[in-house]
Amino acid sequence: MCYVHIEALQHSVVIVGVIGTATKAIIIYTMIASSQHKNQFLIFDQNIIPLCSSLLMTVIFTLKLYQIQLCLSNPACRPTESCKDRICSG
Image (cartoon, rainbow, N blue to C red; front, side):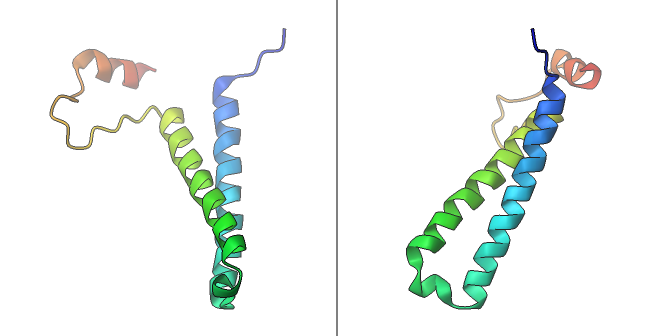
């Protein structure tokens, strides 16, 4: 049975997400700087979608890795003592 540590897998996903975001951002920047985004809109669009997905993947797995809970403005989403203990000890 092959055992893979979950945190190591999440770290590698975050690293791949950061690299993917950086490369797509460089491609999009060069297309905008050379004004090719107007001429080749489909290629520009095909680079925007992976940029957004890489960025979202990086954010989601970083939040999972460090066990960060987002409670934006929902008053019902208040951390309880058991939740605080679980996050601190986890």
